[in-house]
Length: 628
Image 1 (spheres, one colour):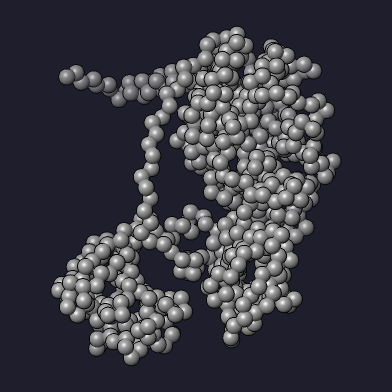
Image 2 (spheres, one colour; image 1 turned 120 degrees about the horizontal axis):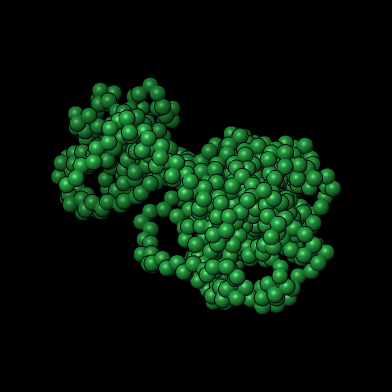
């Protein structure tokens, strides 16, 4: 074994020399020689004349392909871009979705999956140029064309115009976005050779001063590369070329023209980000963004990919293409078995709200998400009715609604289905409408009218319904995580003469560092006495446990959660056959229900909360000892 020692006086020199050497290599490799071993001065950049593009004054053909970083899991970015490079593509094009980067006013996200700078730097590392398409409107089959839904809180909003409310929001977004990409421009040593101004504005064109505003917004913040626009072929002076993809690309290349393949790899529109189509009638868009692209949605090579690679190789005058990356190993998922489910009504306790409103509020104007409204998902509207009759939506349901009376389903509202019969009944009943946002349209001249939820009055017998209780089920990750990190169902066979060998399913849930145990109630057995005896036992083990009682008849939850002190328990065993207040279970002064009586037939389950799984095991052990 050889031990190498360096004196402290030499250490700094060695480190400095090493860092300098690495910097020189990186500069030379990525900034000075991105193509075929020829250095580029980076003074002029990409330019366009009447017939072709030039790079630093020399003819340059853009062979572009679109891959959106927000539609591909970050773990697969490198794989997809390497496959693009191996096909002969020299330029990556990507949109920038405003709605994902700024989900709320003043809240910005450029991390992990949305790390635009990392994506552009990866393209540079692999030898790809970049054409950036920062919007602010991008279409791209996204909800509202990539515009954030909170813009629609303004009832007078006119998007894609110089309406002050819109331009102010654009300026705030660009103040965050553009400084991140300015250092990545070609003239500054980066891969960005061009930037697109807005997107397909020729098909919208409501404001002659809007496009100059966007151009100035980009250039004033430091964008100095070639600016370009993009439009559908029927709104350009020159038309398209008919034919299949390969023959079309061949003809374009034969004429010496540049091309961009939208999409080269489509990926998936994850979550609720897909938009909708407005014409000829509204249709929701599916989350798959495969686009019949050369690379499939799963990143596999297609016949189109191989044909295009062969074609590009015929026009390639430089070095050969990289070898095709090896396809990643794939396995089928195991069958999914659902052990537990949560009803809509049980899920309401996890929602933000509820909100009270005399009139129905659309999703965008719900007072949630720091007053930014609800972006997507579902909204439940509830009110009280005293009679049956004809329920009329007046096309104010966006986009469809499941309708319930006292939690019983009675029908569906959707477009062109505007009336529903409500059965007669006695007394006051709860009418519930679960409204689904199927996606705001991504293009067209009615983007300002894409508010979702109940956007106007719902009539019962021609009388507007009032006094709504509103629950938001936005289905964001933090909402889903409230339910469970993982669930396990533990089956105990209780072999006891008095229990007649009943089988109870004890549902164990771990959530946010705590454990929950739901104890179903049997007609033959109550957990009350066992809980009364077991809690002092686990208290001796220094466990923390809280209790909730879930009421079957009303769906309400009586909460007596928190550390239970045996000295605060009632002095006699708890019997529910005659009714008992939850105060007799726990007489803590805080967070104790003011409800008075629960009866045996009303009890659905006990839910116990533990500070960790060890306390849960101690409790189960104590219960088993007491039972057997």
